[in-house]
Length: 221
Image (tube, rainbow, N blue to C red; front, side, top):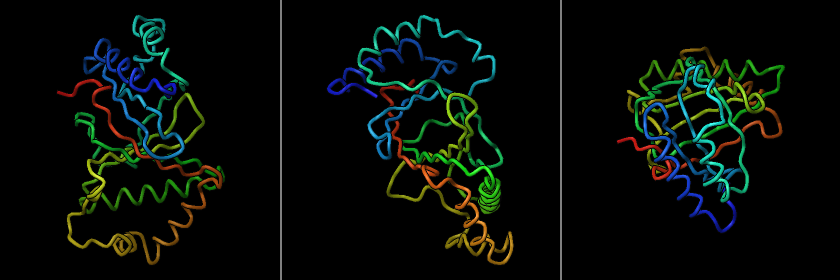
């Protein structure tokens, strides 16, 4: 989060730092501004994907020192790194080689421990159905490994607010009907109800919109 009145200086400093230290595929960083939700006005910097050896690098580096000297003077607050891992069984059409989309629907889920499995069961069925019927949308589902409380992040990139995030191979596809055909009579109502009850009453679901900021990110060209 930038200090009040220093947003432009913060953005310029981040852009310079990114061009200097994050100019290869291995060091690439993407920057997003959070435009809706409780963290609206803040920024998210994303690195990934990485293997485990990447995290053996010490934070005592020229890059870290540069950030402290040239960017931190414009920073109001900064959250530490959060490491996540993708769950392939709940993700579809995710391709790390593709350029970023303009927007991201970023959903955070936290669960009641006693029935969290119900949410995952519904997510697994949803993924199976969408893959079977040629859904073109993109979804990555991640769980927090380190750096915060255990939670799930559902990441859905898209390019325009005015068009669907994805389409099915069949025109006039009816999701509820096809779900019941695949998983049983009235399964959609039963599974959705259980999945919703699995979410915590307080801050169990938070949905935010992120906007890609190419000028503060590694060039994809």
